[in-house]
Length: 320
Image (cartoon, rainbow, N blue to C red; front, top):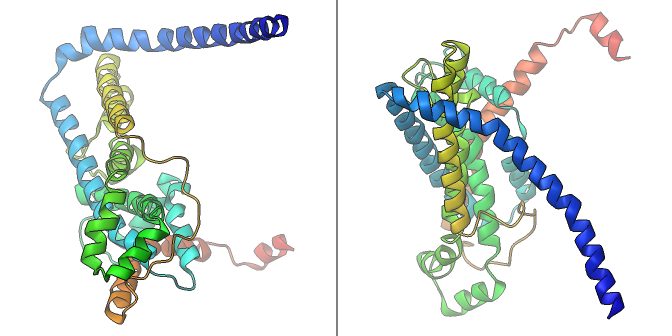
């Protein structure tokens, strides 16, 4: 009994510093946020005009379109990777992780090198404006969607595929009876994550927006402080941005979150579907099209970096 009392006393003693630290952190955050909320609530929202409404609508529009396109591309790529085993598959999956590891400005340069006026595919379409923002966001988030959805496909138990093979399920039956019930639980969380990333995008919109018509909340906050020096409007925009992000996070949490940790690079259960020649050809074509979205900006960055090197004798002597 005495040992139990001593353990409880020790636990209480350990909790006290942690409680004080959390209380201090809460006070520090409140001291930083309360002035912003007060300024935005008392002055910023009083001038809530058509500009602020247009910025909010464009933020939601570009984030929604970016999410929709990213998921529409990522889903078939993930299913094709889940169905097929081939040399280089692990490399392809690793490439899907690469865009998130790159700085935004580096990706923007790569996109401009390929699709800009003087790029490899220059003149195909105007890179600046909504289309350029969507292209850059899809480059970032379609591989993310494919990677997370692939993890959902690989969680399907092996028994399901054995039973499917015994019953002679077609590809459509596999999708309806096995695959869709598995991924539909994680799909809303994945879509909300991508939507949140696109809604809070800054460098992509600032660089590729092409003017005030393509302005999101993040860029509007920057412009309110940098160009107009209007702290009240910046505070109001920041409050709207914060409420939007918190709402999306709560919705994602209510749906069970996106994932339990980052998905591991592992082999899923053996599948018996998609092994006939037409299915394999279709899956490989889908994977190739996905790589056509991912690889050109990366290749353009690599080529541009090599060409821009100073290949003088002094450069090679410096490497010795």
